[in-house]
Image 1 (cartoon, rainbow, N blue to C red):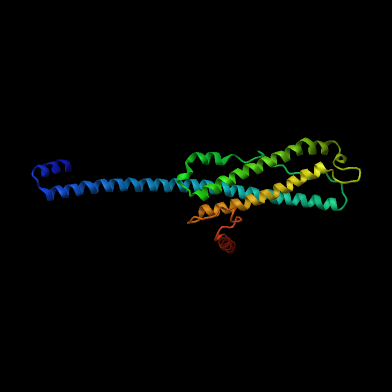
Image 2 (cartoon, rainbow, N blue to C red; image 1 turned 180 degrees about the horizontal axis):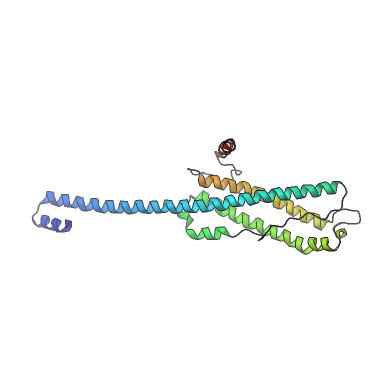
Length: 233
């Protein structure tokens, strides 16, 4: 209809009407493109919110599990240290995770969702680095628990004396394995702080110039938010 009127006005050289029709066409095209842009932005915002919720849920679950692990390892190691101080020849303390030895590979799933369009480069790097470290620490735990299953558990079943030398000292190979567990506890504590920092980063209404690790897992505003949360609780 508009194009037909435009053609008629051109033949009649009715330039005022031609200009009016052109403005109508241009306005219609612009409104259509703008509406399409708004719709795409709305869908992107919804998709980003869904991915953030999924990430926060996964990170929060990791925080809960890691805190329990840190507490249980700390309690077990302290108890063993106390028994050693009393001169007891207790078997080396060991820690085994129920279920799978490593967490599921969550990041490989998120990596297929074109996250570069949804997050700023620093946030994306922070997430990638965290999940890479989580996997690396998990591999260290596998090496630790493999020794436990190959050497410690059979020793407990057979004879506790295999753990100690003639001087009554825990043999270096078993002490080294317990030191790996202490290292794993500290690595898990670091990951726990990192995950907490990432949750704050994802839920904040702003971007941050520093990655969590570079900021020592304490982004601007984290302490004040924690204080408010503690007061409310």
